[in-house]
Image (cartoon, rainbow, N blue to C red; front, side):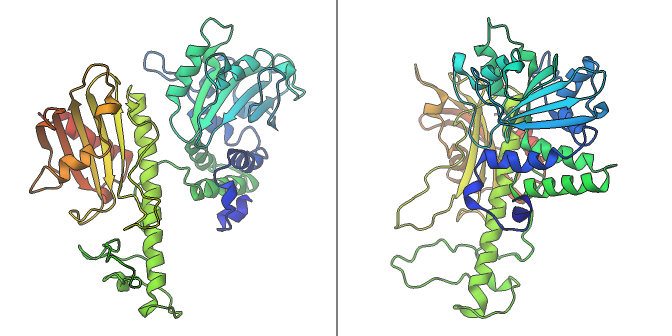
Length: 442
């Protein structure tokens, strides 16, 4: 199925299935020798930070005299079962003559989070398995060096903290829990290409292409749809309603899109041109998601938490009567104290009648919280957007705007900044805009 997806033959019901993803990717990677890919991958797996330093799984193993690249064989067991503590997704067993074997349990997530709380915390249960590996149905060698790896598509620092809190007082070693992202599989595969033999190179390239198809890569700028040319400033408002249905309206400007001549129901192959425009929007959404996932990781590492958890948009209609069924924008808001009033955040505006192009907005807001209220009760999902579009008459891109005493003092102070979305071509660009906001005086 990996090759089928690479070539565009997608099984829709498998897209959100983490078991399918796990078996597809690691079912191929298991054919690589320990000296290919795995050392790079384990360098990217991190333990909890101690005094600001995050030890990698590779460093942890090296401290015990083990370098993965020196091992001779690798066995991967999918869904090994423990009679008491459950079933992790994978077990990696590295062996070499005259050395302790290495056993890495791997728990994989796609868009869900770990299950269970307290004593039933999923990762805590799997840490307990490391003290009882012989009970697994995997016929393992004796006296292995063990670790637990948590693989997700997002920063999982908060989940790992929660697990270790639930393990206090138990005879388990929290230092054996490492976290890594699906995007790191792609990074490691690309790095391992250098010096790989032909067979290994083929496996690594296929895995890389598959993960890119799935969007499991770090943000690396906004891609352009090759068949889509530029629109004029007012040529994209295909979502404007005419009231009752009178046929599909052609958008002025779409005739600039180059398509193959093959007939069609509307003039000049309009339907095919519209498909190219929608493909560009899908790609824009995908790239924006990567940016937000990476920005989350950056903020979480600095001690911030999400105000709205994993929710990134709202106010979409599911009703049959609608002007459009498309998100006008997406947002992320962060706080270091749910009972405090300081929030930092970003908003991406895909379309708005007051904007000539998609925009990247960032802001810092100080809310006044009433007694017994949390920041999620006061913070509005579209506050940054509202502060920029509704409260500024003459808007200038790249300029920091300051507000005070908004909503009868509900927002005590705020700073917002907007730039063209296409000017954000790296995570560093987004970080720089937030730093401009932080440095500006209220």
